Image (cartoon, rainbow, N blue to C red; front, side, top):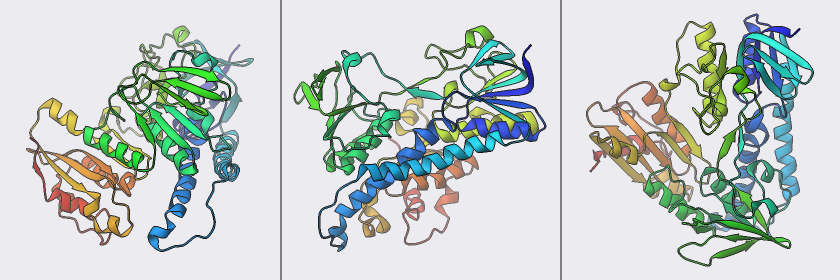
Length: 459
């Protein structure tokens, strides 16, 4: 006979632990299942380790730039990757162990280590245990996608999950994939001391962004010595002794690259293929994402899907918001929906890109009358004082309602500045709320009101 619970949570990524604790606090006997690493991608191989390593890379970058600020450093500057890894591991392990300890010590919670798999619409098997519950919540996340590149089976490549554990500086790192993950690691390892080449099959980097944003990010990376190879339609790989050859067939430059290390950064895939969703009758789309409604219910009424596996957001913050939506609807008599939130995220190159809402391309595509403000970081006193003048901010406004439609802030503090705009969008307030606000001088954020005072019709 199955062990009976009131609720089962499969996976301990960003949504899982908080939901588990909330279910338990509501008096529900709850089982939580983790197949591998408590905390999921963000804590173990995503946000926490990468941003820790980005901080180390920036420290190396600023040390080399010391003379620009009148700071003279005698002797050579080099990166000790083993110390970088030790610092990263200390931070990651504290988070991972904290999550595991918290869940395993919470009243009303029983934690199971192993693969959770549906054997019915109310029943999940993990190891020798069979668990049954009226409510089941899926939070199994996603993992790096490795495309079927020619020759890839015989090549010693890395994914984003592997490279966060690298304890040496590659002589020449080739990165296949010119989007968010690839660019972040590219700049990071360039600053650690690697030669870096980014190979992208499309005509430009980060294709979902506006062309001016894409071009500016490319310029930032090339200014640091990163080689960018675009239009690489037929990518192939080959192990050549200790080195790796990558065929690119680009429109310009050589048709073959040779590097010492290879990172595949071409997207992610949901961890649903061994979940037994077919047995439970849970519908998935052609990419393997679990189909959910606006309140994150699956096609099976007693099952919900949260986080990366539902295809409704690929970020830690959207996963946590999934938890908030589910718990508010279940316990707070507060109807919340996925469609209530704005798309918002950051690209953690340096300087970072903060994004919210619609891009300029999307606004043009729908044909609505709009206004646009754009200001270069080189016109901002605080950025000049910090000698970080790369990038720009661009804000789009509905010409009729005066509501902000979206924004891109590429520049120093862009990942923080974007929240000024995000919060006003959630308040459903006109752009004049920010335009008339008095911000502190000297800051980068003080130029948001100034930029909004220069709105022009989007032609």
